[in-house]
Amino acid sequence: MPAVEPAAEEVFIARPHRLRVLVAIAAIGLCLLTAVGWFALPAHIRVLFTWSQRLTLLAVLAVLLLIIVAAAASYVRADADGLRFRNGLRSHQVPWDRVHKIILRRGDPWAMLLMTPADGRVFTADLDAEKRQLMGIQAGDRALAQQAVEELRRRLTRYRGT
Image 1 (cartoon, rainbow, N blue to C red):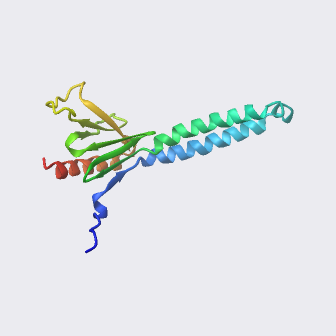
Image 2: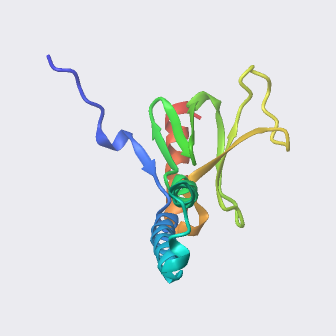
């Protein structure tokens, strides 16, 4: 008998939509601005740049592009095992039993994950509570962000049984 595949609906992925559009526009604009700036220099000035200086300028451009693209690559993935999310270049995995609450308050730039202590201490919702940003759910996406938070809360209730 073949193994049963988990239903596609069991995996939920949230990505920042508005941020991705802004990053695409910014990346294209930055590349165009760099090209226009380079060709705006008189030819007798451009020839004074050595290959290593040109490569340095391209490396600076690449680093700037990497930084803005990393922010847009953020996501939140929820399945039966818990939450997996990437904030910029750093990835995290949190099982459902460590998730206390998922919040998106007015004025917050993105959703937040409140986590119960790993050592089993009683959770106290104060400034010392362990938190993680969920940058894949950007408040700028408005209704989509709220729907994503509500879906994560439903999954928290279903998988934790609370």
